Image 1: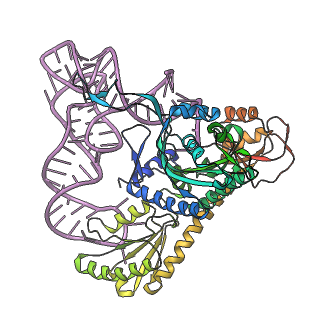
Image 2: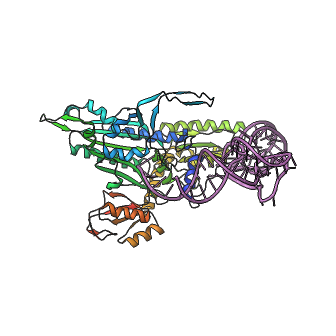
Length: 491
RNA sequence: CGGGGUGUAGCGCAGUCCGGUAGCGUACUUGCAUGGGGUGCAAGGGGUCGUGGGUUCAAAUCCCGCCACCCCGACCA
């Protein structure tokens, strides 16, 4: 009762905030803009990490760890990079506290001022490239394929749990290559990894594309991204992969001797996904009853709820459940048996729906008599009674089916909310009435992009990679265009 | 930093206009019943009313200052 959340219809934004808190994913911390990721939320993040980490390893990358603090001077080296991050950096200026002479707790000791201030990393390109300089001498040292799992800090004005927090968790891959082609190929490969993860694990369809100059990562030559549509039709950038050219190699003087014996600058890439993916996961599938998790990322795939009166019944059920549980575990399915007597079955049903557990099994005295169980699926909120001897096969099939079904639903939603327009008037009308993704011709100039943004709040999310080339006219200026691009209001 | 709003029990709120020593829902504790969709009844514990000052016999309530947070804008994965 107290755990009810507002409906998406009533207030989508409030629905999201409440869901995150009520489902025990995260809560606000004493520090504005930061969050506490609670055990249940963190266990979903761990599932994401595990799947991604495996894909990184499978594509030849190794994990490493670089420090949280970056000397301020490093930030002066790559001009556009500085400009991109300068406005949102946290800076460490002192290294000691002392007791206040007036007895007001502790104060910063003014005598403990650092010679050079330290920047809390907003991203690690600078510290990593300053290190790579020492690691790379020859083409034999390349490619260098490194990833790190870390936290970063970007001092945001307005924050929302998971979607935008001042501190967030992510992975950042940083690679160095001997040739431009190889670096570009790496950038695209990692974009594909992200897209695969989004679609096959998160069950969330994404548009792969290239960012326009104004949306590009500070310091990159090209930024590729995956863009997903949330249920309210807004776009969420869910991952980025950057081709850095030789920008950081120049800034940090990272050169290698090539096969011809000549000195050359190294080519770089970087790519990342963050705890923002948690926000994407929530907003892609969940409903008014709570979270809906894809089985591949659900910390618990199956929950078993006993229905009993008195200890004898519970014991009889528990005995039966032990066998069921073992059988499911043998199939690699994660199972929780909730035999608590402190909550009623109905309460548990609601609770596990809120938490998005894909499959629920209920078993009571009637089932014991009949040799049956009740199996309920979270995505469709349906349930059926099946024979006990078919349970593990049914559950296995159901998990696959749920994974596929929520993907299909998300894909259908995106299709229904994606519109192609020819004119700017049409564009504005669609944006106002229907929202979602809009494909339209654009003349390729930053001025036009800015005009659309100022007038409609929609931005170019990306220049889709799978969009065919076609001659056309920019919807705003009428100038020639060779491709439609993807517009949307974004998170 | 501009515009709007809110601070009262863990959470959500009423009480403020019109001053009289704090209440509702929920959560929590205990007992009994209940148990196939958030169970019912009864009893109980818990609050410096954001903060500092002022007016008054008396302040959650009136006056002045300060602080914090939220929403809308500018910035952003």
